Image (cartoon, rainbow, N blue to C red):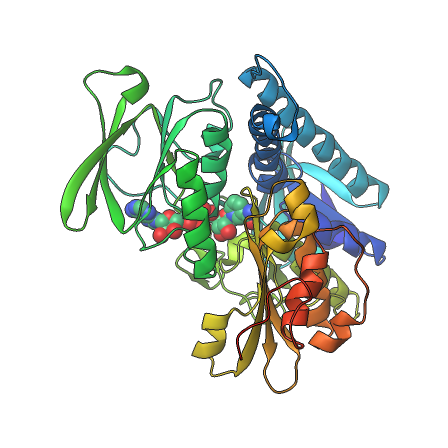
Length: 471
Ligand code: NAD
C-alpha cells in the first residue's frame, strides 16, 4: 500500500508533534511517525518527569522547613513509589493529550519507525507491517539520546543515564553525578531534597558553564548548604565495582589538580550531554550531510536534500524543547507560504533548581566579547517583599541594555518564578523594546515580578528599593 501526504514528520516529540499540528492547522495533509511515545524525550524521559520530581521533592523539603512559617508537621515522610506514580500519571496525561490533539487537528499519528528511502518516500514499519508513504516534504524531528562516556566501567550495573534514573524504584542513598550541566544540577536538587548524599564531578572549572558565572557561584553555595558535594575541574577516568557492595557499590576515579581521587556511590548518573538520534532513519544508499552525528541544516532548517527538513536536538545546537517547537512552527509556516510567527534565534534558557535560573539574550561577558557597550541593572531579591514573605530572598535579576539606545539586550535571573518571568524579557527583546518602554507598564504589588521593574529602574536612575549607589 502507498499513501500520499503533503508532509511526513518523523518523530512526535515537542519539535515534531508541534510541527505536525501547525501544518495540519494550515491545511496540509500530515502524517507523523513515532516509534516510542508521543511527546518524545520531553514528556516521557525529560522535562516533564524531571519537573514532577522537582515539585514533589521540593514540597517534601518545604514541609520539613515549614517551622519557620509557624507550621509544624510531624513525621513528614515520602513514598518513592508514589512519587514515581505521580510523575508517570502526569506524563501519561500529557502524552494522551498530544495524541488526541494530533488526531483532532486532522493529522495522522502512525506508531512505527520511519526510514527515509529516497527523496519524498518514507518507509513506515509498524506492528502491522510495512507501508510506503509519499510526501513532497519530510521533516526529521527524531531528537537525541544521552551520551555515554567512553570510559572503563560505564556499562556496570548501577551506572545510569537520565533515562534509567527515572526508572529506579528507590531513592539512592549515595548518588554520584558525572557532569554539572543542567541535568546534573536538577537531579542534585531532587535527590538532595529526598536525603540522598549527592556528589557532582564536573570537568570544567564551574557548574552550569554555559550560563552566566553568577549563577554557578550562587548555586554552588546553595547546593553545598544542602549537603551536595561539588568537585569542579575534575575529569572522570573510570568506574569500578567496590568490593564491599551496598550503598557504596560503585567507585568513581577522577583526576583533580593532577591528583587521582575516588568517591564511592550506590548509583552513578552520567549527565554529560546528549547526542543526535538518527538510528534507522536512513534507508540503504540514502544519506544527508552530517557533522559529528548531527544533521546539517540551512537557515530555513532544510537539510542537504531539497524538501527534507530537520529541527530540534537531531540538528545539534541548542537542545531545548521550546527551541524545537518554535523551529517546527516556522517550518510548517514556511511550507504553507507564511512568514515566521516566532523568532527562533532568541531562546530562553531555564534551569529548574531552587531557586530557579533563567536567562535570555546576551549577558555582560558576551557583550564584552562582542564589543557591545552595555549598561547593567541588578536588583537583589532580598529587597523584594514577596521574596521575603516566602523566604526565597536569595537571588537577583540582572538586565543588560545597550548603553547608547537603552534597548534591552538580555536578562539573567536567579529567583522564585524566574522561569516564568523570563518571558517578559523575551517579549521585550523580540520587539526591540527599550528600558523606558518596559517601565511604562505598572507591576502589581506584592509580586516577584516587581523586582523586574526594580532591575529596570536601576538602569533608569536607580530603583526605589535599592540603596543609592555612591556617586
Ligand atoms: P550539558 O551539556 O548541559 O552538561 C554536561 C556537563 O558534563 C558539562 O558541564 C561538561 O563539562 C560535563 N562533562 C562532560 N564530560 C565530563 C567528564 N568526563 N567528567 C566530568 N564532567 C564532564 O548536558 P546535560 O546536563 O547532560 O543536558 C543535556 C541537554 O539537555 C542539554 O542541552 C541541556 O540544555 C538539555 N536539558 C535542558 C534542561 C532544561 O532546560 N531545564 C533540563 C535538562 C536537560
